[in-house]
Amino acid sequence: MSTNIDQGFFATDVSYKDSAAIVTGASRGIGRAIAIELARQGADVLINYNQNRAAAEAVKQEIEDIGRNAAIIQADISNLESHQKLLDTAHETFGKVNILINNAGITRIADILDETPEQFDLLLNTNLKAPHFLTQRVANYMIENKIPGCIIYTLSISDTMASDNRTAYCISKAGLEMSMRSYAGRLAMHGIKVNGIAAGVINTDLSRVRIPDYEEAAEKGYIFMVRPGTPEDVAHATVAAMRLYDTGVVIPASGGVMTPLLNLRSMSALDMNR
Ligand SMILES: NC(=O)c1ccc[n+]([C@@H]2O[C@H](COP(=O)([O-])OP(=O)(O)OC[C@H]3O[C@@H](n4cnc5c(N)ncnc54)[C@H](OP(=O)(O)O)[C@@H]3O)[C@@H](O)[C@H]2O)c1
Image (tube, rainbow, N blue to C red; front, side, top):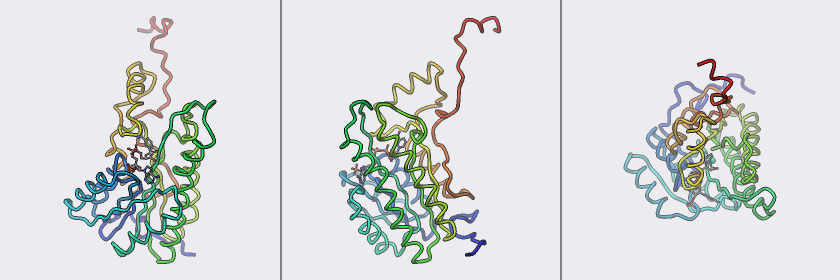
């Protein structure tokens, strides 16, 4: 085993020229922003979508306008049999795949006391099992073809912060963080880097309904939150994670939500200090 791997995404001057990425869930929200940012950086992109073909086609057009190649593919990633099609399409279209962005995900609101096994299975199959096994397939492809690569997971502050009305989501994301770390350990010797982004409250279809609550909490001083995040904030963090001289780490994109804050400003006993 070589101990001197400093190539591809372990180099300090990472180049996206001649790179080709698969981005799951790239028709909307964070995945769309990541796909476009990768194209801006010089990569070709396979845009995976599940239901919104028109939106995926619009992303393809945006990428082509930037001057990069793009293709779209419908696949419900929770169906593991669709994964080979994803990989084959990207390889046949671009000649190789050296970037995988595990981004597609769903959430459901359900009180932990009412959540059903069916809801739990849906969340775990889509958010955890699917990216875990897609990574396995793409990693084996990279190893077989001796392609140094980079795999990024869109993780969440919910990896570590519990929500009792979205428990299956939190469990799926916590498990996904361990998937990320485990692959990082296994793949470093092959020049394949694996990192994650802990996204905060990002203004997309998935989270829009929660944003007023967070804004209120920030206004009252319960959490630091500069502003709700944009998909582009996560896309910039993704590119930063790809350039990091590190693997198996999670970098935040959460506007300060995770910053511990002991807020005692309103306690009258402190008034004497003013
Ligand atoms: N928004 C947030 O605040 C936030 C915070 C932390 C982490 N995240 C994570 O970021 C990722 C993206 O979230 P988002 O906010 O951008 O969500 P979004 O706006 O709802 O977009 C979800 C994307 O995933 C695709 N998708 C959903 N289920 C799929 C499936 N089974 N197979 C393939 N594609 C599928 C959708 O495709 P179609 O529209 O074509 O069906 C869409 O492109 C998720 O993993 C989410 O957990 C989001």
